[in-house]
Length: 309
Image 1 (tube, one colour):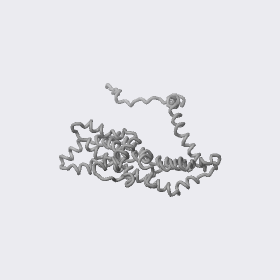
Image 2 (spheres, helix red, strand yellow):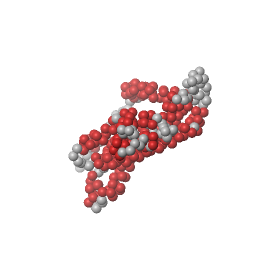
Image 3 (cartoon, one colour):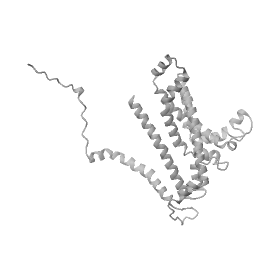
Image 4 (cartoon, helix red, strand yellow):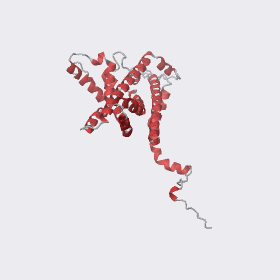
């Protein structure tokens, strides 16, 4: 009897994993990254730690030699002060309004650019342009070229002499932020639309689904994570808006458009309360970190979704 031994195909053999080196080898591989890591720590973490230290002092620049340690008193003041609570409400209103409207307009523009038409590349470039404009330049453009009661574009087109900044301060600031951030939302949602399977959509059309049913039952659920990502990233950036408020309204009239970053600016450079301003800055950083944590989870979910396809 002849015994035949099957030869194992090398292509079916599991890959041989490289043997991991010791701690010395791992540190050698990480050594090129150490200068960048040290630079990031010096630039970001050291100033933040110093801000934490300042937030525990009662330091007014008008009394430079008097800096007693007060612990968490500045945080109590920040959370109980009427102006800061009003600034927090304004921050939520301005951020939510800008994110919601820019998301709606961005979705409409993304649906437009997802179709093929003559000159689509030129239109896409023109729609992206507002996002490339510096925030201070965008604010000056809207304040003088669009909202000005004498020679502004709105009054020149519709007639009248309405002072839009004084009459609708929140609307003026939100409109400026929406104009600049709509392209950002559009790009995120356009990427989501282009990742949708055309075969599934064609199958739904063959089965008799109309455009609205396809959009409501297929496109929107597919874009859910992209909508969440755009809203979270937009909130992280827009919650720190300073340029538009400083340029267009300077927090007024009264405190109608004073958000947390602008209130910190007033506390630091008008009231000269360095300790209180530092505590307010720490609160803003904590709120931003909370929002950023949700954003990172959404991004991680998108990556896992792409890997499973």
